[in-house]
Image 1: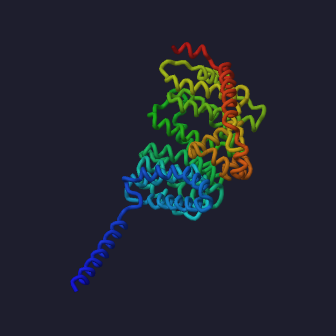
Image 2: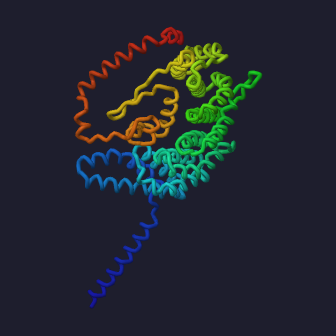
Image 3: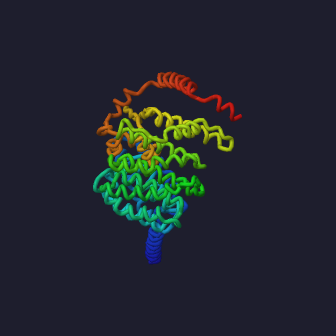
Length: 439
């Protein structure tokens, strides 16, 4: 009798403990403040983990890794509405990393409006870094969905929020910078009305034109962060310039080509570089419209570009001068001769040539969001491949890819020879006299 009562008591106690533990587990947030960074790191490492699992375990391991990967992404999406700002920030960063390095079209198509609502909430209620991360995520979402109804729905919801933050002088400056860049790329991807593109470009012009010199030659003074905002607006405007029809291009050339060179005198090196590249882009587009195009102020402009290409002012940082000289040598060549130094991008078994300022501006805009995942997107992202006219993705099995792989020793010999040739070529165009004068 006693043993039966004792057994019943122990059973009842065990049930109560299990109920209490279940309640405690349900009360735990999916991503707490303490482990969000660990979760983000494990998410980043899952790309290589999934690949290794596929090679070792076959289809079963691949399916298991995919399920775990999607479960982790769902956790990030749920955490974008968490009460903790730190948790939301970690979730946004995790989703950005995933979209920058992997094609997730099937996964996000059915969840795009949920993600759009979360991004809109973070943009409206978040602070600086969170708003910037949400703006970048919105752009990556549009790049994943491509040009179509899905991305148009996303952009129609977020465009008013972008413009509201961008035009709000009291908003966080970091958020305004991110919104300027994201608004430009999203307009390129998802805008369905060219008149709306013109309206967005007017919004950008109202910002960077404040850095133009006045008719009397004076210039307004801005903080470095505000100048950076104007730079982002100028680069976004130049990106949309690449898709404008000829009639609009002629109007923009007439309005800006005579005023843009005043930005070459800005104190910030990155603003000078952005202005120089935009001037080169305008000249390229103008010559595409009219092969006999002539600019009245060509001689003073070339003199200014030449001085920037050989700048040796001691009050400027050496790295800034080196970067500036490299860019403005190319800009000067583009303005004087209409020439462009072609760059070849290798990805997988394919190659792509950056042979114009239009392509360069577009490539750099996309690379600014996907970063090191650019080569992967060039291989697999249909929208980006269509922009650069690469055709449908090339599918190669692992056995063929392994057979095409160059032996390590041959790669070493090729890289050594290429390094020597590149050094000789650069020594021919390097201005050694200016470098010696700095010391």
